[in-house]
Length: 380
Image (cartoon, rainbow, N blue to C red; front, side, top):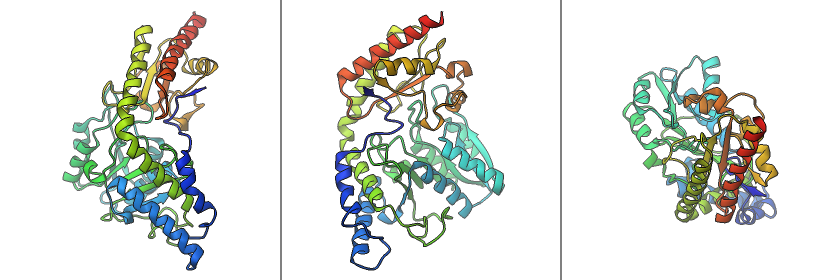
């Protein structure tokens, strides 16, 4: 089996498991307890906070540990908006993850916010002019993802950050797919809040973090004992925090070598598929895309049929976001990019893990071509 669905999740790194083990065994205490066992857990938690802060180039106190990217996105969007509801208006890109889109819709339904969904072009790239027009003295928060989970397009986040800063609007960045592949310096990005999921760079599922600028107020979503400096109550998952910080640091250390290698493998795969399959479409930006992301539409086929044929040939990948797996509806991201609904339902996404080998990518390219041709032949 060749696993090419790293945008959905990655295997837990051995180094991460080793780093987590003490927090699961001898340092198992509650970090809020004032005794030696609890204090050992508290030290592990603060070590993780400091290590994550180094990658993000922020202060340790600006790191809030969460259960993952979905919670981080909800905490940022709802928490910032409810704490600072200037004019109750939100600017949200049209291709955001459902955890951002639905958090904004919750604020619309129950708290009287309005939403401007900032459009993207055919490549999934944010329209900066439309973003500029959307921002106003009424805007409470803007949310723009760093890189898209379905098509891999990298957004001009720094430019969006400058526009938001000029208008006094906080910017939240969903960086879940960017971790390990793109720079995460929050000041350079102009991010006032930034979400990370631990299981994408190699920590266990159910762990993540939110960077939150110390200048911003936040209304917590979970109330209780006031953990995480009052921003996220509940006994902290110390092992998960250590795992997330360790995976993030390891991925960042590998980035300089991994990015050009994965981009080279991706370009080979894309070239082989498009060269052998007339009518096949690469979705997302042709250049400004994540190094391991190759997403296609194959008009005239069924994306699900192609996926089944690929798995029969030993290639595991997906049609898009794992959150919508099994849905009969076409991808909202592809529709926002102007792709016809019938074509959008032919989508196939291959996302290369950092550990993939060149011969595996070559094998996958051949398998994609053969699988699509097989599905096309059966449809005739």
